Length: 418
Image (cartoon, helix red, strand yellow):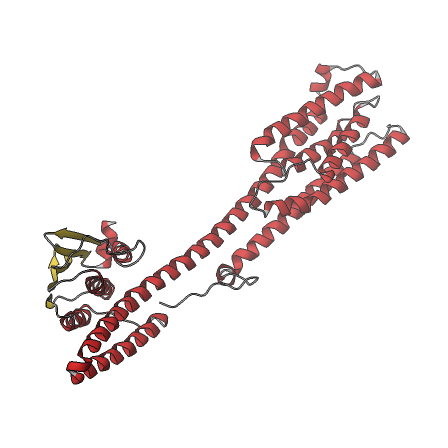
């Protein structure tokens, strides 16, 4: 396992450096969405001018053409804001801002002038539907239906008001039988809002996928840090406890048995070097823990503390991953025993059981105190065992504490059980 450092402020995070394609897709998605919105805005603005009645009064035609150009330009200018708000985690900022308001006023004025003409001119309503589509991109999903309904009311209401102003009779049957009108209405009221909504929905999905990818990267970093911290705790907690124990023993032996004290000091130096090598190995992912070595080391340490320890280890072949968990369980149990208990006897037993392995570490010095803090020690050991389908339990009975670790015989069988 290698240590993972935090990304520097302002630098690319590991997700960006590891998956440049995802970032490129997001940038391309924003760019293509902007281009699509500009294309739709310009297309419907041009269509409105192309479908204009050539018999319209010159002054009215000039005003309508100018308003159409202004409305189309405002809609295109609003595209960058739409794309920018799509990239934000917060909800859209709404439409009560100068640019969206100017867009709606210009679109309504265009349709009002067109509807008050002496002849029916439904094409001048296209910029109103364009403005509605842009507003749909700026409001929350729950408000989009009401925006759409409001645009329909405006469309019909302005048409009726224009007919009254122009003194134009309204023949509902003839109006509904006009094929051109039905095409324009279907494009303006159905196709256009759906076009805007689908474009923004696609970009929003892409934005969410990118945020999910970044979150997954952050979780992977946090998980790696937690795993590294657990390994470091397992190694250094044990070694430091042994060093403290041997230092106390050497201090007591210094006056009455200098030779024994010197031997303990020599052992402390050896353990310190081993701890340094273990730490380096964890950082460089070279460390391999075996059950037999860990059991012998635990028995030696407990014997130095004046604790009678018996060891019984099965001769069966133990997979490396499972052996690592069992070895760490022995180390953690030994550390807890020295730190929290005052036993005179301990026993470490590893045997085959039910197609897997059963490890028990027992001592007769159990206390009523809680032996571990949450997230470290036995809790971390439980997480390791659970990762391979195993369990960790602790039981106190009549002054004896027994740590039991059950693991399957292989990683594949653990996966089948899960």
